[in-house]
Structures are given as structure tokens and as C-alpha cells.
Length: 453
Image 1 (cartoon, helix red, strand yellow):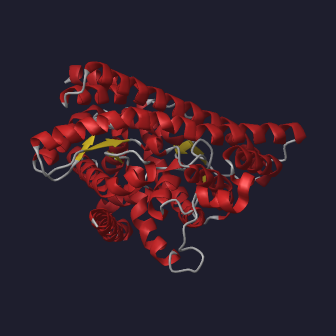
Image 2: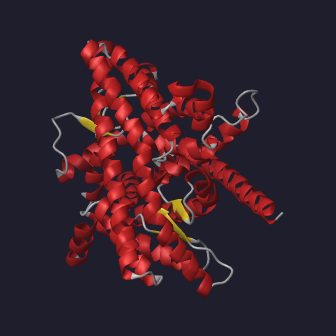
Image 3: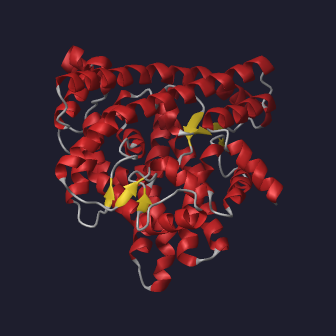
């Protein structure tokens, strides 16, 4: 058992930029790609992951000080430290049963593929920590390891089904065939869909308004480098930087927004060959079946709309943290909230105006859920010593992926103690998930009918 734990921890410790390409290379060889093509695709994917990670870290490094400066001016005391997703991952992996989640995820995927219950091969195994995070919460509430793994297994099933439903739209938006997203951050798209149905009935919000449309209306001011520079200037002014600091932040933001689409091209270069090979292999084995490769979100990172929403959400999150009743978390490491922008992008199909409205509406959810998760993440951190905390210090994350799903599924067992709110939220999430899935299926049918016509 210890050998299994050590093996799993070693491979996952390599990080997404190494681990996921290895999985892709192995998958490529299984579907009979040439060795040189499989290796080339895998290494290119590793380059893309590393490049996107570098840019996100760069962007976080330039935005976070400005956000911190804004917080200092407020004088508000929020006791829960925001450790971001990396700290949550470290704490989650410190759970004694964490290593068992990896084989569970693989077994469920294989069974569902064999039973034709999913068409997604999940190559995003590195993000297994998201299932561990949910299991930790369930274990903290129930004290039962088996229940914790059952809930995590249900999450795996939902991730695969969500990936199936999203694939067609993701392919249209990204231009990359045969890939989809298995990250649980897309779970937020289900409740966002309900809101989007309302927004689309409002005149002016029901028309196309993506980054290309913005360029047509604003000209050079909607170009990545100009827009990034202007946003950086605004942030620098809000943070009360001096002139040099404001101009520097402007150029730094311009750099980030200019390079994101460049890096995204490497995802397409890496994924298209493996996607085609998987498709051809499945056609040879199962003439009536398609297979999709499930990945983490970064291959969508070339969408300018995502980064506009991310930057918009920074001041929204800061303001909300000051005035939101029940919030006790100080946004910091999670201030660059990809987990709200990606689902908004998928639901709104890149409509920037609706995306910004969605991000504003759902920002409080992240703060409330981050506050709710603080007690047991702090206890686990203190118990395992995975993260050193000062006496009395609490830790959590202001951008927990799929916050409504994660909170509802992990806390639903509280209904046995008389707290029915998480169970009610769970039911509402499932209803919204079903409605959203139906809309995605219908969209695919209509597009296929148009292609045949």
C-alpha cells in the first residue's frame, strides 16, 4: 500500500506540465500514432502548459500587489487567509487517504468508457486533487472515509458527463477538434445557464459581442496590447501607484494579454494530432462512436474574453469582500479567478457583456464558500503540518473551483443533522445541470442538421 502511495505521489509530483504530456504520449501510442508524432505532441503540450503557467504566475505577480494596496486602504479586517489553489492542493494531498483517489478516478473512467456511458478519456489526471478536496470536506463532516470516497466518485462521474455535454461547444469556441474540459470549474456553468437564459431576453444582451465584435466597435482600443495597457493604467491608479508604477503596470498587463493567445496556439498544435489519431482509432474499433480527450482548462486560454472577465473580477471581488455579509476571507492568492471566467465564457459563448454580469453575480458565491471551507482546511493543515499557520490563523481559498457544486455535495450530509440548506442547493444544482445539458445536446443536434443540409 505504501509503495502504491509513493508511486502515485511521485508521478503527480511531476506537475501538470510533465504528467499530462506523459499521459498524452502513452495514449497516442495506444491509438497507433507514430512514436515521433506522439512524443512531439506530448512535449509541445508540456510547452503549452508551462507557458500558460508562466503567464498566469506573471499576471498574478503584477496584479496581486495592486489588489493588496487597494485592500490596505480599506482598513477592513478579514481573518481568513486566502492561500489560493496551490495551498489547497498541498493541504488536500496531506490527507492520509489521498493517494487512493488516483486509481479510483482511472477505474471509474475505464468502466464508463467500457459501458458506453461516456465518450471522454480523461487525460487531466493531475487535477485529481479536486476530488480529494471534496472528499476531505465530507470526511471532516461525517468522519467516514467510505462516504467521502463515494461522494468523490459521484464527482468523477459528473466531470465525465459534463465533459461529454460541453465538447461540441468547446470545439466550436476553441477551434480544437476532439477535446473537452474535465475540470470541475465548469460545474458553475450549470447555474450560470439559468441566469443566462434571463440575460438573453434583455435587448442588447442577446446579440454577438465577443472580442472580435469589440474590435470592430472600438478599433485599436480593443487590441490586446492596448486594452491590456489601459486596464493596467486603471488598476495602477486605483492602487494609488505613482506615475512610474502606473505605466509599468500598464505595460505588464499589455504583455500578459498579448501573449495569452500566442501560447494557446501551442495547445492546438499539440492536441490536433492526438485528437485526430484518437478519432481514427475509435472509428476503426467502433464505427458509430467518437472519443474525446478531456483536459484541464488552459487550452481555452487563448480566448481574450476569459482574461477580460478575469481582470474585471479582481476589483469586483475586492469590493464584495468589504461589503458582503458573512464573508470572512481576504482575497489574495486566489484573486486571479479563472474558475469564474471559464464557465462564464462557455455559457455566454464569449459574449463579453453577459460574461461580466455573470462574474459580478457569482463572485459572492466564491467568497461565501471560501469562508465555509476554512474551518476544516485549517484543521487539516494544522493536523498534518502541510502548511505552517500561526496560532489562531485560518486558511482557505477565495476561488474554489465549482463552488456551488463543491459546497452542496460535500455538505449535503448535514441534512442528517437538520441543516437542509446544502441539500436544497444540491437539488437546484442538479436541476440546472440537467437543463443546461439538454441545451448543449440540442445545440449539437441543430448544428449537425445544418451541416447535413
